[in-house]
Amino acid sequence: MQSLNQTASIVSKKPSFYFAGICGTAMASVAVALKNQGYSVSGSDANIYPPMSDFLASHGIEPLPGYYEKNLRTQKPDWVVIGNALSRGNPEVEYILQERLAYTSLPSLIKNYFIRGKRPLVVCGTHGKTTTSSLLAWVFEHNGLNPSYLIGGIPPNLGQGARFTDSPWFIIEGDEYDTAFFDKRSKFIHYCPEVALLNNLEFDHADIFENLAAIKKTFRHLIQIVPSNGLVLYNGEDENLLEVMRDIRFCPVRRFGFGTQNDYQATHILHENGGSSFELQGATYTLPMAGDFNVRNALGVAACALHCGLTPAQIQSAFLTFKGIRRRMELFGVKSGVTLIDDFGHHPSAISQTIAALRQRYPNRRIWAAFEPRSNTTRRNVFQRELAEALGLSDGVAISAIAREDQLAPDERLDVAELVRQIRESRQIPAAHFSEVPGIVEWLCQELKPDDVVCIFSNGKFGGILPLLLEAL
Image (cartoon, rainbow, N blue to C red; front, side):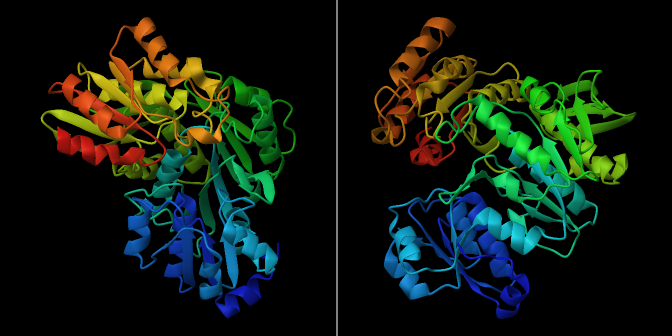
């Protein structure tokens, strides 16, 4: 891999960039941000679908469908940014290596090209990274600080997931997933954190982490690069983070949470009218979001913003105007009295928290869940029991076939039939699994009543179930 350290020469030449895997959320966001700065940008992907395909098209970028050598021969880019979903055997990867083309990972590009010399605020954790980093970026933007940011989603307040400015502040979502097939370190290791904001830590990404201990290890690696004039802000009620934070000596640390042991303690938490409020250090903060997990996300944001010099009034003003994040408890539509919610949740803890928040937002209404086992962890049987417990918190469950099932050995796969059986027996609620999305739509239409709420849980497109269900209703 060629180095990106010759930043001055790169800038002077205005190089062209080709993104292999351009429809990834972060890849698309950076591609658009570069194009907005006048760079030539192109790319390819095997999975081109909304919202990222629409986002790219709205900025004049039309992804090439599929991965082919001819794409690179035609485009002749100065740099190829290789997405972390691509591996050896991919036709474009093989061509890049054979022809010795200049290539890099997205995190390395961001670090060497955009973060150097900035004050990075890195938001990490198994859950809540996108919402927290979006809210933090909006607090800074709303108050005229014009931050650079990179977020794994499209916040309505900001209009895009990435922007690079002359501001000293750089707010970035720090993912623990690996960087690329040629760099197996976690992405967040590249982001040079001045402040590391740690929401939580659980087992996830079973395709690259052997166990929870491996995830704890990579979080400790992150903490080891926080400077002595920086700060680690962490959820003081997360047992795994408490273990990770033991014996940290070279950087300041502060805890946030609901208990008295925390440096930033939220009190008087209320949930009403679809929103939340809490008190922190004598100031009251109100959010247009429901759920204890959103209060904790906002508490971490408030603590970080206070540390960076913003006032409670500035933070509260931004909170009141925050519009949420796409695919995080997002209202998709209402038809025949049934409310459809789109949610990115795919980890059992995230599903549990979302269902709890929906019960706060929609009290006295039935909450249904439709779940697609699509992530590299939930396709496996590592969360067989936990998924049954999480989905069983709803009033009815429909489960699709496992995505890319043929890529897993039978003894590795989530047992969907057993999952349904566990839910039925333990919770005594309607539950069923289907090989095709139309079967889910038909079953739900038979079961649903006016005032019901259906939450679609998937980190993919789930066969276009939302528009199909809306039309069928």
